[in-house]
Image (cartoon, rainbow, N blue to C red; front, side, top):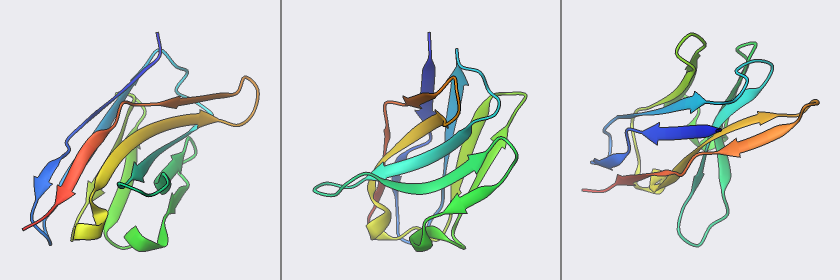
Length: 118
């Protein structure tokens, strides 16, 4: 059974930090890209950060310099360190695991709420 389980969301003041983690199970943890997306109320889901199995990273312009994505191949986890958080970072954050070559797959976690507010 495929599972992506996120943890680490919560309420933080502007300027604060949070670390999100996603534990993957039941899926091949190789030759894929893992990432974090977010969706704020009334907005479309957007890519926040992504890391390939080769370690190449990609960030949304809005989070560059503040967020860092990393993955632990042994523990099959991907993490998102979020620093200097802003109210506009408030959203539900989703973990994603995607493989674009055969056998293709696209899995999502259930989401974790991040709220940045004073």
